[in-house]
Image (tube, rainbow, N blue to C red; front, side):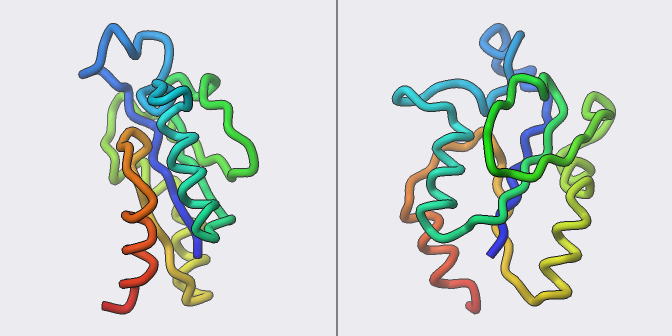
Length: 122
């Protein structure tokens, strides 16, 4: 199973908190939102993880992921950002491998990922 995290947006609705960092780098309980998501993915066996970056991309400091860049994030939307990971999407299709696509700025718990994995064929 693969995971894609979309983290390219400009985070404008949370200004001034996001003037210098993207939303996914805001902390909840001592960890950034994206660190929580990566931990949930990894704890559920998802090792092939890609992150699509754009706004303040240099601030997204995470390890063991593949990065895709949307350098035109100001002028397009989240679906356009997702298409920057087209290579991973096509890999998943050709290998018949499941993929979880997540926004980078949503904090959720382990049961969400478990439910997705358990119900992948429904």
